[in-house]
Every structure is written in C-alpha cells, then in structure tokens.
Length: 282
Image 1 (cartoon, rainbow, N blue to C red):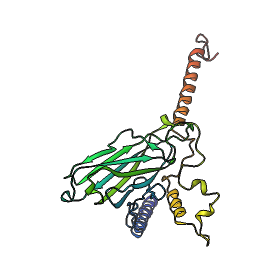
Image 2: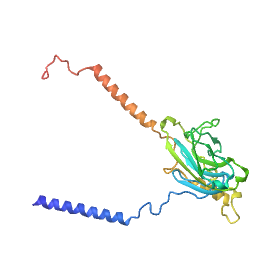
Image 3: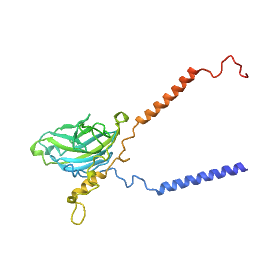
C-alpha cells in the first residue's frame, strides 16, 4: 500500500512538472519571433563610416555601379574569416557589356590582406543577373612583430566595387549583399602574447577625447559617433585574451601520458614487491 501511494505521488509530481514546463514554454515568446538576423541596410563610402556587421549576419545596400562600398567585421585571434559578397545587377537590356567586380579585405591598420583562396574578382557577362565573390584571409594572430604583415585581431574592412565596366553602365543601380563567417583554426596558429587593445576604430581615443570631435554643447560629432558605433561590435564571446588555445589541452594530455608511461616503466623495472620463493604467510 505504501509503495502504491509513493508511486502515485511520483506520477502526480511528474505530471505537475510537465504541466508547469509546458505552460512556461507557451508563455515564453519564441526567440525568433522578434529577432532578425539581418544586419545593416547601408554601406559606407570609406573606412571611417563603414557600418559594423557581426559575423554570421548579412548586410545589404543599394548603390550605383562605380561606387566604393565598405563594411567592417570583427575577427578575433585564432579565427579565419571568409568574406562573401553578392551583387544583383541591373537588367541585361540596360547594360552595354560585361563588368568586372572585385572585393578587397583590409585589417584594422588598413593594410590590404591577401586572399588564401576564393573568387576575389569575377567578370559578369552582360546577360548575368548577379555575381558572387568570396575571399578567405589568413588566420588572425594574437600578436605579431611590427615589421611583419600578419593579420591582427580587430575590425576587418570589406570593400566592394566594379573595376572594369562600360562607361555608360556606371551609375546604374545595383544591390549588394555581404556576409562574413569565422572559423577557429586551432592551436597550430597560436602564438605567445596578445595585443592590449584590438585594432578597432576609436579604440585609442576612448581614454582621451579629442576636442575637435565634440561640439560646443558637449555632444560628439557625427564622425566620432560613427567610429564609436563601429568599435562597439565585437565577436559573440568577446575578444579573447590571447593566452588560451587548444595547445594547453595537448600539453596536459602529453604530461599525463608521460606520467603514466613513467610509472609503468618504473613498475616493470622494479619487478614484484616480494620474492617469488617466499610463501605468502611468511
């Protein structure tokens, strides 16, 4: 009887817990209901006003053929970024020939970074409806020598433009869509040390504001506001400190294996604790 009563109480408790969970889930709004993965709907005309786009989100912009379009993406140490761009071209009847589109990637020091692989430049035929480009840059290092050109953590700028097109086609409306994805490259590319501050716009001006960037009423100027907006975007988990990598895991695993092999070798070299001729009860 007691066992039956305990089982009934357990069943009722489980049913109450399931009911409460279902009610809580029903009352909680879906995270996708009001969340949009779309990024900015404009592009900058230079490095200073490039809108910042979080990795994994796509940004769109309406522009004209011949314009230079800029976006900024945060890339952290140990990550390898792939920049993608898609340009929707005008109607073929409005164009007068093929056009060459190109993307370039610059780091926080505005140094052009080479593409490891990807279609960085592509020729769009006159009848083509769109053109897609991609560029995968080298793995970002947490620290580098001043004389080297290794990519460092911070903002990376994507520039999109047409490099060769009929003069009559310049100024035609186009629509661009860009996106950046990052992938952790692992401890093989890790180095000792880290930058004190990521290379992002406005990072050096946070401690002391320039008077030229402020109005008489104390409000920041539009240029300072744009730089601050670009600097606030960072990776989803924040900027890494630079000291952690999966090399620590392999180091600890190697130390444990070395200890085990050492104990095993010592046991084999030492042999049994008691001579085999002595009886156990002696």
